[in-house]
Length: 133
Image 1 (cartoon, one colour):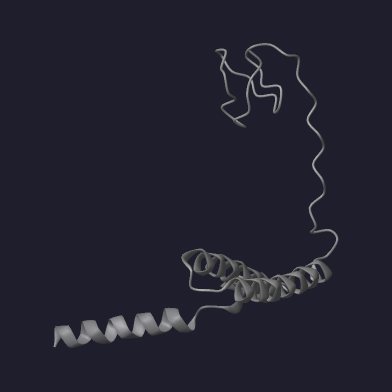
Image 2 (cartoon, helix red, strand yellow):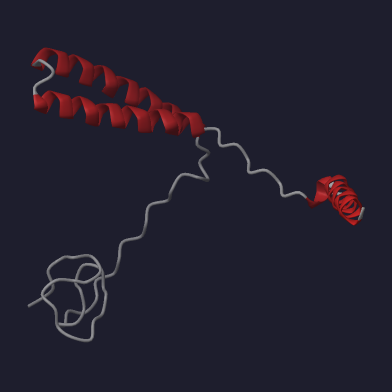
């Protein structure tokens, strides 16, 4: 009898909490990207190009088949990229980054990215370019 009462109580409480959720308490859904399907298609085309190149190098495709298929995929990719550019608002397009100002040359500062290090190094630990020697 006690077990039955406990089960009824659990069902009643869980039903009450489930039905008492208000719409304003739920999180807002993420907005749908207008270019999501195009981005997925672009990724699929790049994957197809990689697979095509692999199959050509392994010897599964003739040179003519490879060139024809590659050209078809590249044309399709160009169309997808153009459609993405058309649908992307100007505000979302990335602005060009300003050029870094060159830092005074010393053994501990990278001439390319300006990163500073405690010890003199041959190659920059940030960008990997050769440091002043």
